[in-house]
Image (cartoon, rainbow, N blue to C red; front, side):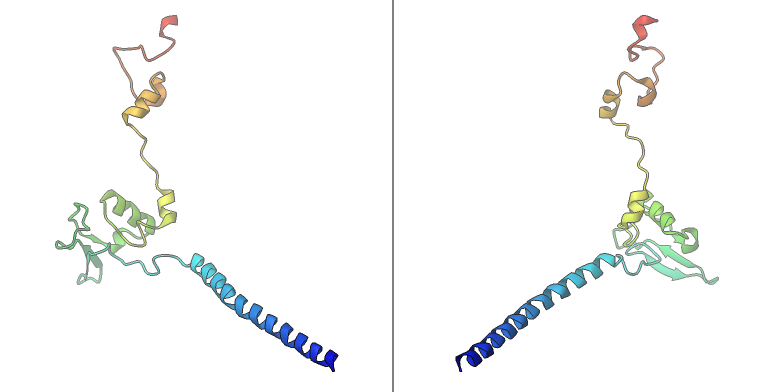
Length: 155
């Protein structure tokens, strides 16, 4: 009789442990799947034709025109409207937004476009001091003072 009860209690224990493990693994698996799906999602899911807070209007010819909204602050100093056909690609839109200091959700925060952006050469005083002895790399040419060249004594 004891062996039958012990077998039954062993089975109950085994099933109970299996259920607890199963209930523990379901949320973990769900969380992992949701995280993986969120990594694949591209932000912004929809990119507007005009920058944030700009007015969208249609001309008689059917062209879409974007104009800065005077009451909103996302004009970046640019008050010139443009037609959407003038900026056909995301890269054109990104260049326009950066040049005019405009925020455009899905364009100015697009990591792919930001990584393609070429930065202008650094012309600050640290760069000039760092390249003090090389005329070619500093971009500075002196006609009166040739002391930047370390070989000037040997000439």
